[in-house]
Image 1 (cartoon, rainbow, N blue to C red):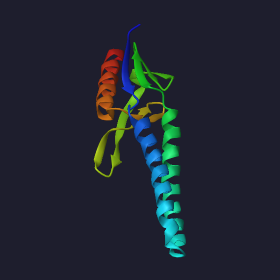
Image 2: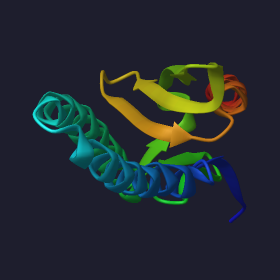
Image 3: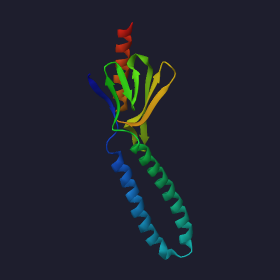
Image 4: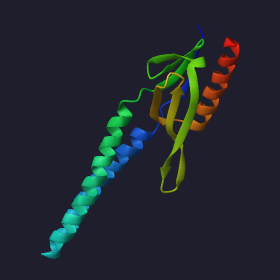
Length: 151
């Protein structure tokens, strides 16, 4: 049976999130060393700084945990079946496919969230999909191809 890999997890995200955590640790250490000589005003700066660092660290660790749960191959085609995160559905059962690019301070990313709507009313979705716009185009093409074959 032929297998076509349609969607993969975005590479390089573990490295970038890990780098953010490492920089937070270094920046925190340097900041505490710098604030130590300020006296009583240092307490205000340290409290504000700790809140910002804690918020950023929690967000980054949460993203790393979510990313670690996404397999390297997200979606593949085996004959007339779509295997999406281990769940098998017929390609003709796809109602619609949508995506949303991940956003950053500097614009859109090439990866994002893929959502597959099925005719039975269920929804399959996954974050961290590489080249998510290309994946949507391929899934829609397969949907139309197999819907025409069933008619």
